[in-house]
Amino acid sequence: MRNRNWWSIGVLFLCIFLQAGPVYAAGSGLVNQGGQWIFVRNGVYDSSVNGLVLYDGAWFFLSNGILDTSLNGFVDYDNAKFYVANGQVCSNYSGLVLNEGAWYFVADGKFQNDYSGFAKYQNEWFVLKNGFLDTNYSGLFEYDGGRFLIAAGRFLNTYTGLFQGADYWYFIVNGQVQTSYSGLVFYDNAWFVLSDGILDTSYTGLYNYDGSSFLVGAGKVLSEYSGNYELGDNRYLIAGGQVINVIPYTHTESEIRAFYQARPFNTSQAITYAAMPSLNNNTPGFLSMTSLQDGLNAINFIRYVAGIPHDVTLKEQYSKYTQDATFVLAKNNTGLTHHPSNTGNSPSTLYESGAQGASSSNLGLGYTNISDSIIHGYMDDGDSNNIDRVGHRRWILSPKLANTGFGYCNGYTATYVFDKGNQDYSIDYVAWPTENTPVEVFSGPWSLHLSYAKYSDLTGVQVTMTDTATGRSWLFNKQTNNNPNLTDRPYFNIDTDGYGHMYALIFHPRESFPANSTIKIEVSGLQDSSGNAAVISYFVHFFSL
Image 1: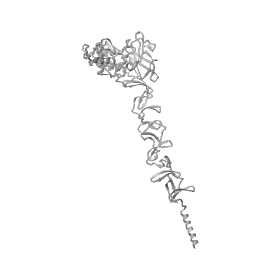
Image 2: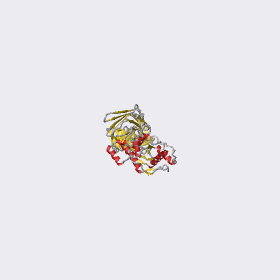
Image 3: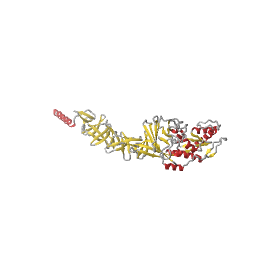
Image 4: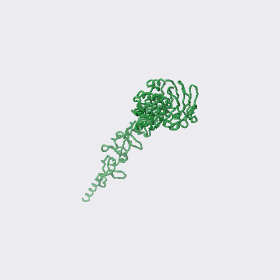
């Protein structure tokens, strides 16, 4: 009886053991059993576990309590998706994952379904929308303050050029819009104007870039155009869309006549005063508006003919300087000088003002009025003391001149010329005589005034002058006579001093040309500021007012 009961109890325990499975050490977690990882709860294998389980700091996917190493994909857990490879969540992985035909963005193994923006994968960048690679996106994508070029969701970091967006053309470098760039860019065999990285189709005119100027139409350099282009008081010689020379504007004969008729001057009209000067009373006086306007009309007429800004205005302070200058010169009565002493004992304040005016002005003696001194004095400049530089002429034709003033006392005249009100105005050269010149206002040598900025080396310059009617020609170069006293020989000189803010070539054939003559001028041997050879060519046509 006793032996039977013990046998029954042993069978009972064996059945219990076979039904419950093996018993493991107390606790819960994964246990390796014969190369297979199973989940144990309270020391007993738990086949009811399905899904993700945290064990030893990592997450694992179990199926029926067994680690499913065959799973590679996404698993839903706690309202999120996790990327699993070989049954384990890839918590160290961030990037893109291809799953069932879609690309997912994962950060630390978790699908980022709330993220839209850029993501890097295998050294490339991609556009994401709600965590997915947006392969439908092509165009510009804004991210972190920049704009990037995208094709099928992929950042085109190798692209450089122009790109047509929905509203504008954009300048792209290495896939990114260059919002800080303004200038020219070469694309598809053409040059385009950009403003803040966008093609500026509103831009038409001349565009300065890298030391050169270009003719632009609707944002594109007109490289097919060669010829003249006129803008304001300037005319530009264009070759292949690029400005070769900034040249004076050419007015027609009828335009010049009309300008003179609207703003006449009279070189023989007696000078008049608003306040008479008196040497005995040390009162310098002041010119009448009639005499001031007569001189102003003469300056602006000469500049109009020359094709440069012709809107010079009177400045009261300059007229005070110049009137005081002529007074001091007249009281000293020792001739012309730009630096007069005070031998005439003018009051100190008056003397200082007069000295300022004398040092800043063209000065003359023996002319009827201001316009007479301008037309027959300063613009001639052909006497032996002035022909080597024609400085007075260069100051009257200074591109920078915007304001002036005049003085006249006892035959002494002064025209203020040291003004630089047109500081921003630039031109490559000014010629006198110029393309259409009235014979009434030209005498003396010929001169060509050259920009400091444009031309650098004048050592090899030569000028060829040809009368188109007779074919007669003159060649001027360093071998030509430059002695001003040999008036029976052609004359040539190069002056690089600062008169009128330009260099000057002075050449004189010792011939005069009547109305209806046309003379061709060719200047060769020039070098521009970049060291390139440069040529200037123009025709001078004389006519009568």
